[in-house]
Every structure is written in C-alpha cells, then in structure tokens.
Image 1 (cartoon, rainbow, N blue to C red):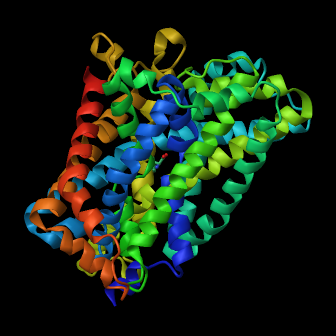
Image 2 (spheres, rainbow, N blue to C red; image 1 turned 120 degrees about the vertical axis):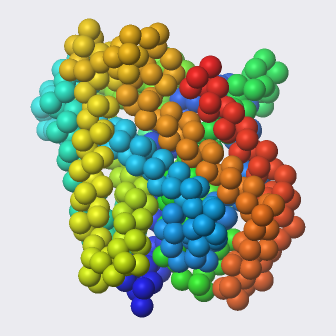
Length: 477
Ligand code: PFF
C-alpha cells in the first residue's frame, strides 16, 4: 500500500529515460567540453573512461540497488540499513538542495537563450552585441530572477504530476528529442570548414598532458565523472526506489553510464570543433556555454546561425530540466516518505505541497546566486556582492561567487563524502552480496559478481577518495 502511494515508474524504458535524463545535464553539455578543453583533450577522455568503468558504474549500481531494496528515498534508504547510517542519506538530500540553488539559476539562463534565439529567428535583435550580451545579462538582477522563477515553476509543474504521470512522461519525450537535436547540431558543425582540428584534439592519441600534470587531469576527470552521473545527490537511490523488482538492475546501470558518456562525447564533438572552426579557444572555461557558443552562432550568421543556436540551447534546456527535476524529486521524496510514515498528507503523502515548499525555499536561497553577477559584485554592476566581497577576504574557489559557494557545499564536500561512505559500506560493512542479491531479486542471474566485488573492495573507495581530495583541493587550494 505504502509503495503504491509513493508512486513508481510505469515502464523500464521510462525509468531509463528518467535516470539518463538526470545524468545528462549541464555537466555533459558544458562541463565536459570545457574541462576537456582545458585538460588536454584526449588524455582527459582516456582517464574519464577508465574512471567511469571502475568507479562510476559500481556507485551507480549501488545507489539504484539500495533504493530498490529499501523502497525509500535517500534518507529512508540509509536509515533502513541501520540508524547509524542515516546521516549519509541526509548528506545526499542536503547536497541536492544546495545544487538546485545554483542549477535552477543556470537553467533559467539557458531558457533566456532559448527564447532569445527563437525570437531572433523572426528578426528580433534581442541580444544586442553577442560578444557582450552575457556580461550585461548576468548583471541584470531583475531579468536573472524572472528566468530563474520561470525555470523553477516548470520544474514544480512536472514534479507535482507524480512519478509516472509527471517525471516519466516528461523524460520519455525530452530525452529522445535531446538526442535527435544533438545529432542535428553535431552534423551541422561537422560540415564547417576547420572543424577537423577539434576532433583531432579529442581523439588523436596524446598522453603528454598526463605526463605534465597527472594529478590535475585525474582530479578534474574524477570530479566530472562523478557529477555527470548524478551520484551522491539522492537521485539514483530515489529513482531506484520507484523501479519494479523484475527489472535487471545491472543492465540498467550500465545503460545509464554508457548513455551519459556517449552524450558527453557528442557534446564535446559539437563544442570543440565549433570553436576550432571559428578560431575560438577551447579552454575558455565556464564562459564556453554562454559566451563562446554565442559568438559561434553569430559567426554562422543570419537565419541559420539563429536556428542552430535555438536548437542548441533547446537541447541544453531539456538536459537541464531533466536533471533538476530529478534532484527536486529527491528532496520531495524525503518529505513524502516522512508524511506517509506519519499518516499525513493524504493519498500522495502531500507531494504537491512538499515540492512547492521546497521550490520556494530554493528560490529564496538561490536568489543570492542570481543577484551577484556571477561574482562581479556591486562594483561590477550587480545588485549584491560575492561571499568574498561580503566577508572582505581574498577570493578563493569557494568564495568568488555564490554559485561556487553552493557548489563547494554540495559538489565539493557533501556529495563525494556521501558516496565515499556508500562505497565503504558496500565494500566492507554491508558487503557486496547485499547489492548482488538485490540485482538477482529480478530472477536474472547477476553477471557482474567478480567485477563488482573488485570495484567495491578496491577501485570504488580509492576512486571516491580521489574525488573527495580533488574537490577539496580545488575549492580550497
Ligand atoms: N548529472 C547532472 C549533470 O551532469 O548536469 C548533474 C546534476 C546537477 C543533476 C544538478 C541534477 C541537478 F540538479
């Protein structure tokens, strides 16, 4: 009865689209290309793939299995394994909350670009000079808040619909559409003269960057892999709890990891060759998605530039939405589970109310991110200062803007800490069989016993330790 009220995915395809939707996000379309650009192209790709196979896949399976085994969201799932584990679940939900405080702001910014290019196709010059638009936009507090609000509202509308009727329906349409749009843009970019340099940078054998600064490449790839797979942020446990016992968990985890990696590589194959073709720098850093790409579309010129720009930002928008709803669901599920246990909130455990309250709090706290001009502060024309400016200290990775502050709390500490604990619990406390038995609850014979045992005992705890070390040193180093 209780699990009926919690809701669930109607089909395995729906579950897969939702889990892939969560994994495929700004991390793939933005983080992956720019980090690859700044970390030696091929060398980065190589390390990324090794880590995804030996670390990411096992954590993914562990989270999904834990969720399905206990039938609970993140906090409930850890608590069901023993009261002393509960705090790790709390880390996941709190991390999800902090992530949304900046991710929803970014989602709103993407939405602005989608609408802007749509209007531009019909002749409206609403961006002004493309080279300076980004700077003007981020210091316009009113505009940033409005787009942030609209994006948050869209998330609430999907979540309030429930798991099968809201999340599953959205992803079943959005994910295939995203793939198709990405393919069109990729083919168009491939036809541009000069694009070949970008592919060479990505795919021709070159491990020199590893010899020059091994630790930097490994740290960056490890953090990227972990974020990109949506691990440690309550999502895969929550989605796993909505999955039917008859589905093959190992296969599902593998499909999600492979799809996420494929889309990241495809995004690299759009962004890096596009930069090569138009003579722009790969390693432009975080500005790549918003300012560099805008210059690319302006260079394509006329209607076609606006059209490709529209398609590109539309697919980025779909990716951002499917990711943010997964985390908002992770937070909402916490309250729903709690309500159902206490007999409150009626049939659905107060789903609508829970997600609206969560969204309002996220909007209020996230306003800090929308208003500081991404760190430019009052001097740079924004409405409020960055944390460093407010405290009167020298800016560091965690304090140079509010976005980085919330990122530090979530991606820097809570997520890798939680996932490292999960890896240790599975390898040494609950033991690998807890996960493998859940895989076999479907009636399929588990094929990955030996491989996953090796991962859970050795590569996953070590890999997660590298992620944690890398994140802490990059924020505080
Ligand atoms: N895997 C997501 C990405 O690559 O963008 C990570 C994520 C971030 C998911 C923020 C959800 C979210 F709200």
